[in-house]
Length: 73
Image 1: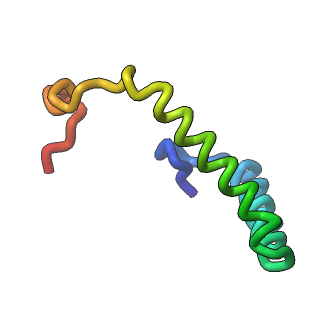
Image 2: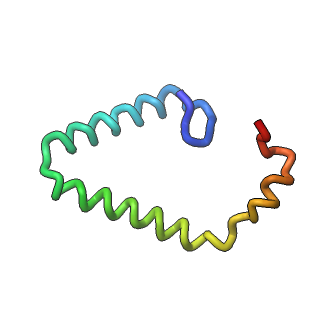
């Protein structure tokens, strides 16, 4: 299995992630939206806040296009 960075997860990490996903799915199925919705909102809001904080540190799109790593396909 490949993680979000494109690298393979060691089997123990894969198993742990699968268990966490299974547990979360069970929680979502057995609890009202109002219980877990707040948790998801907090997570999403934190991610957005973090992205906005580092927005000025992103490279300009022209710099990315000039990179030899840019996939032109």
